[in-house]
Length: 288
Image (tube, rainbow, N blue to C red; front, side, top):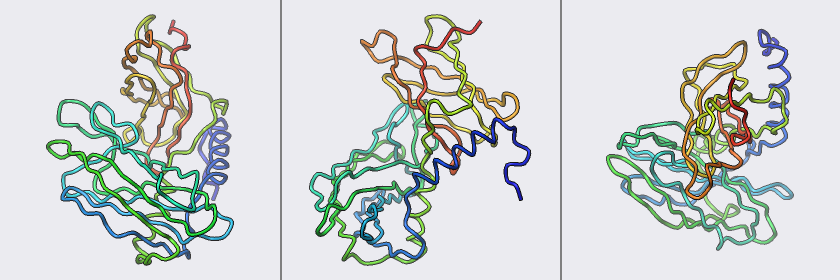
């Protein structure tokens, strides 16, 4: 069956481009690969461990940081929203590895308990990690600083170590979490990829813009997360024609920035079908 039936030709071209990007960038352990884990580092509010596929010669090392939260607690995305603290990763004491990169699955929005909105995760999340094996024994050594939030926010810190070649394997059901996490990473869409977003400043001199993007899913489930110098948030989502969504971005520039936000990284979509692309708010024309 043609899964693109009923989608406009413009959206077909966009989705085919995105699917090609997914195929070219997705790195995940194959189902048959053995996944190993470090011991849990257990806090009262959460527990964390490192996962990794046993390394194959000539392939990137695929790993992940698994965070399981106690009932009622949340933790934060790479940008925390109105409040909270994003995690900080220090892999400087790792050996046999280079170019270690942590990526983030698409987040959710939740109340921060102080009248604002925070961006992050509830219950559990696996943050995918990729690295290049430089030879010898590959050992991940992570100093982790992160925060969890229940009725109040609590900073947590600890150290995790994992040598994938010699660590104990985890059951298949737990290993699947590592593969699934890679599929939840937003796909990077090049700025020139059509159809491009339509952005207009709603009023001259004010930090508020209308944004129109391609999207064919459930508008009620759609979220968007703009990141830039200063603070930005998206709201007022509505369908806008065949295969598009319209929403508002508003915020406040960083002190001393002269009202400018600079390049904006916009992450948007729904879990499992999320994208990110650079947009320009500063240069957007004023709406007629």
